[in-house]
Length: 111
Image (cartoon, rainbow, N blue to C red; front, side, top):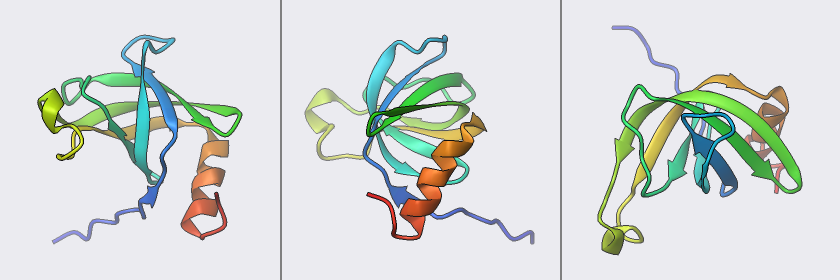
């Protein structure tokens, strides 16, 4: 059986603009980030396989990324605070500087 390598997820609560069109028209926030993707907490989800464009804000900087939805879970509005909801996105293209931010956080050096 092939060994699956998973990159370390780090808590990453930052604003993300996302959508299937560029520039992205929806806004929410990221809950975690890894080398291969991120999780967006939102009630506005897209079907798995959908290509998304993203602009990720970290402090006063903006990073661009593209990815594909790999999972999506929508819950009723009254359960949003209680149940994990949103989308898992696998990167197809990501700004290298965002990965520098990820590396610092995963090593415990980021804010």
